[in-house]
Length: 115
Length: 112
Image (cartoon, rainbow over the protein chains, first blue to last red):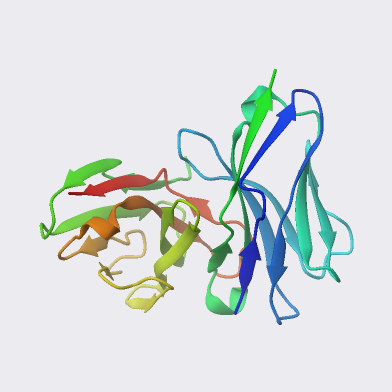
């Protein structure tokens, strides 16, 4: 069975500094996808970044990058130059397309950016 | 505008009173899914549908029903709600095999 683990319930970061949110996953499948979503206090789910298991390079999207270490089964999210608007809940998730597009989510990490 | 809509956004009800949360998408997606979000548990899949008239259970289907009579709509039905179904519910849709899923704005349900 697939499982996502986010070990940091909450994190603080100083504005303009970088922060890493941890995510480890467990799967025996060779083909899978890893996602990060942001959930601000308003509640909506915002897609941030995607990494496929066969992708050779780490995914990047603006200030977001995914540090993908396949052998360690980790997919950490790095946010550079944190902004106050980055304060939110962050979810790591995984999917296998053989099961439709089912996403398995971690418990989430609350990030607070301090000014 | 491509979007997933859910109604209602907020609902307070009482135990046993049947309710339906609607979900609609305008992107012609085959795949639609319902998740519930609870503190410390993240989001968990309730039911999903691969196409019209094709639905299947997710990880936490007990107490819920769904139907997919039209491609764009995927309502979630609680026949006899109980307090343990108090949660934040999300509908999501995507093309089969696509990387990105589109989430609705969420429905916050409280069952007293």
